[in-house]
Image (cartoon, rainbow, N blue to C red; front, side, top):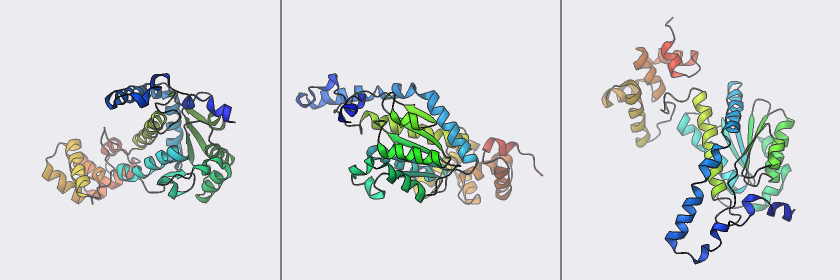
Length: 302
């Protein structure tokens, strides 16, 4: 087992960083930065698979399913991070995007390293949230072979859920257990085996792509504006005003009045202004258009 793990590219020593401990700070930071700069191009090589995963997730949302991230350690934390940022960014309900981490919630702030070796724990965690055929489970593991992540995929498939894997090694075991396997070849880390670095960055980029593209395709975005965002503090209220102003061309005062009339929902306010209707009608149009602003504006009045 140790030999197999040692053969993974994420575990190999990086020949460009063997003198890391003897370098001046500025030089070691330049090397880190240069290594980080390779991550985006590595992700680009997997766009087709990422797109396929997005299509699975969009289809799941249309049938009332959830996006469920599962992982251990850094990978698990990245999934949780993406999940918890969806409600304020896209106005989703808390249960629409879920992040599960091996070892439970406490593992987010305190390492529970042994939990990753327990595939049955993943099955239990998914059973606890009643995962089923409508859902998509996205398992994250830099190594591509973490037992917790493999167990999550196997359980998800056994109950009919769609499955996606995200790994940072080629020919990953995880890919064999998923409907769509995303493999990002980030190569050896700056600090040997520390996959919180390039591999972690790659997984963060992929999670960003999965959730953002899914929400765009689900009508949660108008143009490049997050029109379903939840204005829960002064900064976000100001942002909502600016979103309305940019989308409609009105000034700041009018944008604030529209947001108030729309009960704090920027998307409703935008449809009100662009379609020339009241809040109730704007909401009805959005409902008929499945949340898509462009379609709601074109909906013919009854």
